[in-house]
Image 1 (cartoon, rainbow, N blue to C red):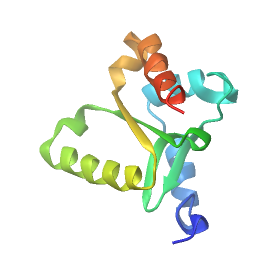
Image 2 (image 1 turned 90 degrees about the vertical axis):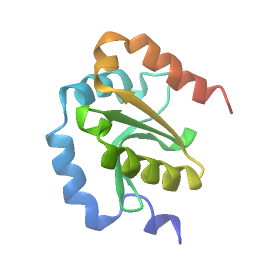
Image 3 (image 1 turned 120 degrees about the horizontal axis):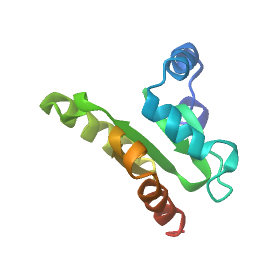
Image 4 (image 1 turned 90 degrees about the horizontal axis):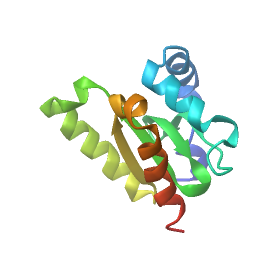
Length: 122
């Protein structure tokens, strides 16, 4: 499969846009930390599609995906769905970081530190 068929598929554009407009408070807060290359000069994108999945945040240059998990992600069927999704994304060479929403508000420096660890692996 060619990259143009994997990333930001045109058929998902309106859905990605609607997700950006309806972002959770945790997504909005994390975006404030990541946008405009604020974190070590890396460019992040929100609601970026990879295959048929739309991820919360992606830093393509670092092959990094960040997912924020709310309460529903603790349900058994969601855990399996998340694992399958992560495996697919990781099979493309991406690192997937998952954080619970509450950490965005309680531990923003921890989140930045974990993201920087991925930057420093290269």
